[in-house]
Image (cartoon, rainbow, N blue to C red; front, side, top):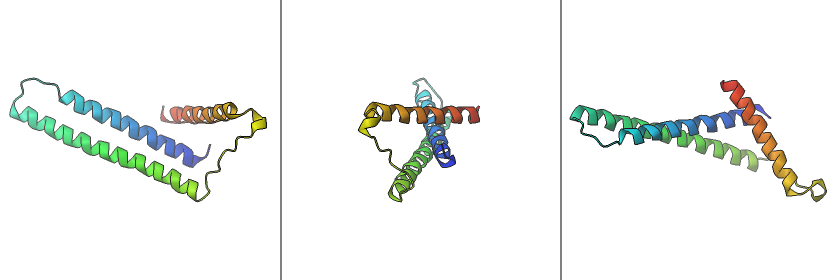
Length: 112
């Protein structure tokens, strides 16, 4: 797998982790309990900061999709042609899943 693919997959992983983390922070801060004004102000700031981080993560995901579209349009991504004599669509799907798993294993090892 190319370095560009690995980089894009890492960006997707980082952005989705950030989205999950910040959404969890927002949900946790929304718990109902009696709070004073300073605690409410802190929670309001936390929600605003988390929302901004989520927007940045979504923008990063949009960048990845734009990059993939651009590469596809410019012919930098070669389509996988499924030939009937090669075993049909099942084999193509298996090959694609194997490539994705190999890539995710490599990303996990690099981030560990």
